Amino acid sequence: MASRQRSGIVTGGTWCVDRNKMIEFWPQEDAVAEILSEEARGGGSGCNLAVDIKKLDPSFPVETIGLVGDDDDGRLLFAEADAYGIDRRQLAVTREARTFYTDAYGSRASGRRTHIYNMGTGALLTPDHFDMEATAGRILHLGLPGVHRIMDAPWQGDANGWVSVLRRARAAGLVTNLELVSVPPARLAALVRPCLPHLDLLVVNDSEIGALGDDVTVSDGITDVPAAIAAARKTMAQGSAALVVVHFPAGAVALTRAGEVVTKPSVHVPQGAVVGANGAGDAFAAGFLYGFHQGWALPDSLALAHATAAASLRAISTTDAVESWQACLDLAGRWGWNDAIA
Image 1 (cartoon, rainbow, N blue to C red):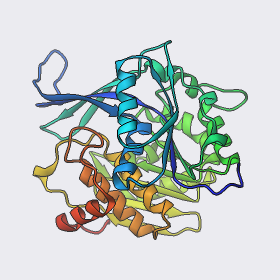
Image 2: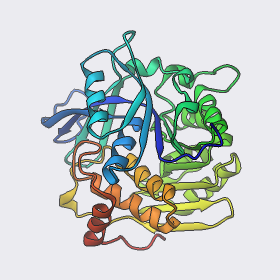
Image 3: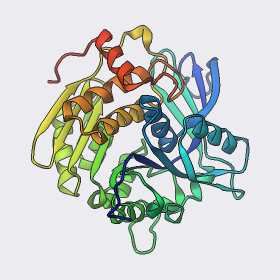
């Protein structure tokens, strides 16, 4: 199988239901805030990136691997996958736990998001759910370390289940990428550093690269770009990735193993256009991985990544506002780009 001609993307790991709630503001304890709107939609890195890619290009092959419950939430996730033509033959069902769900709160006042989750089936996902030899995809997008109990634990001699899956994926001939989540920095580093020798790509945000590089990369909400680049270099030195991409509100930087540093400012999104930031990181990764898979130049892949993320900000859900890759780039062209990264 490793020698076969591969094409497309396989998303693996977190499939959950997001109970999206737009609120006035995030309250302090013992305070109250009004829910302005709410909905239940598919979420998690496995779902979000798969749907985003299909919205960028409906003809693009996308497979997924994960675990859901035999319940209404699991059936909602199956319906989401089917609506976009995602190959879900490896999206397994169990009666041993309810489907993973997240209460995803978006603050209208700040534009920021807060997630509170019930791990449910996420606690039962194991490397044995991943049959990498049965996939036809070329790139594995795997996540999320820190919210899957068995995957986060040692597995058959490996530091954790994520290492086991990445190792098997590479042996089967796939290019590997890992999606992260905002767990405490020390825990994130402990889980992800053993994965670094088994990654070909790493697309993360400024806080996550700081955790991996043990650097302060964000202060008072502002990204220290030189510190992020330094942390990316340290992270790359610990593993085998050919490319590390770091995104942040003002832009993104990409480092190659040859030492090249490419920067790209983000889209200048009108303030009134922002509805919610939930899923923006997944949208960035989707745009970047699509361009990478299609052989685009690195600056062009970063441009699509930013354009997809910008488009996604127009909805409270993670994927609803993403459009075709051409429409996302057209939107970015109309809105314009932020100033060059310092």
